[in-house]
Image (tube, rainbow, N blue to C red; front, top):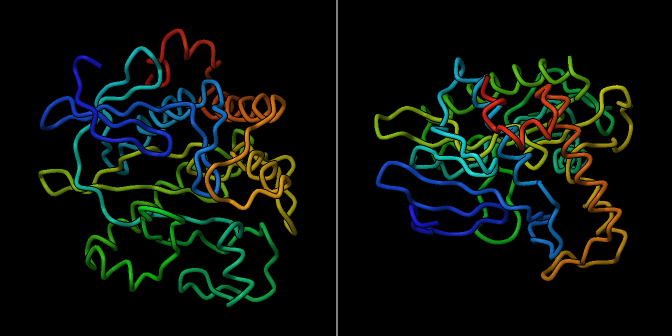
Amino acid sequence: MPDAVHLGSGKVRELYALDETRLLLVASDRISVFDVVLPTPIPDKGRVLTGLSAFWFARTRTICPNHLLALRPDGRSTECRRLTMLPIECVVRGYLAGSGWKDYRATGEVCGHRLPSGLRESDRLPAPIFTPATKAQSGHDENITRERATALVGAERFAEAERLAIALYGLASDYARARGIVIADTKFEFGVAPEGRLVLGDEALTPDSSRFWPADQYAPGGPQPSFDKQFVRDFTEKTGWKKTYPGPELPADVVTGTRARYIEAFERLTGVAFGRYLADPQVVLA
């Protein structure tokens, strides 16, 4: 990109510097599971993540400012404010699933939250809980207690991040439920702007950063069908793969099925046909 300097590559995104105050994030079609980027891309996945994040950024500004400055015409690139990112993942759980379910079965707790006994997998929690995690440079993120997270970011920042994350989840969860999607849990990333404010960054409430379940099929007591990359995780686990690099190639039906799930989540939540977004990405900001 002639107007940008490449700074680095993440599992999904490419990061560029536009100038001293702005970054360019470009969402690829790469997909990662168990912290390994698979060799097979999912067509248009990056555009789904970019468009859905922009949609949520436009609708959550009353709760928390965000890093979005502009959405570019390719539908996968965003111009963003530079932030100093907090060294924790800010996870909010409204339902008992994934690593939260594993921790609960082992200890009756999730990240230091003592939960009622007798809960089943995928049960709705009495109230959403904030469960921070470390940002692993390699390997898996690790769930941590609020005490450890406070030691990393300070008590005031931790309290602010918890308050904002739960408020964002509450707004999005109610909105999504009315459109047929249960947001079981989601991950936010916050950064500090030069003026000292906490700002929402990275992506927000996408199939990559959340568990999206179809509300009309929700049945606690086991795993749920999903609109996120669980479909790919399930396939890779059946192959006998050891969850180390390199990952397995994805067959055409898994690629097609994953793309369809991502696009269905996009269209249900935004109310915008995906083809319309491809023609004019600005529609998600309206």
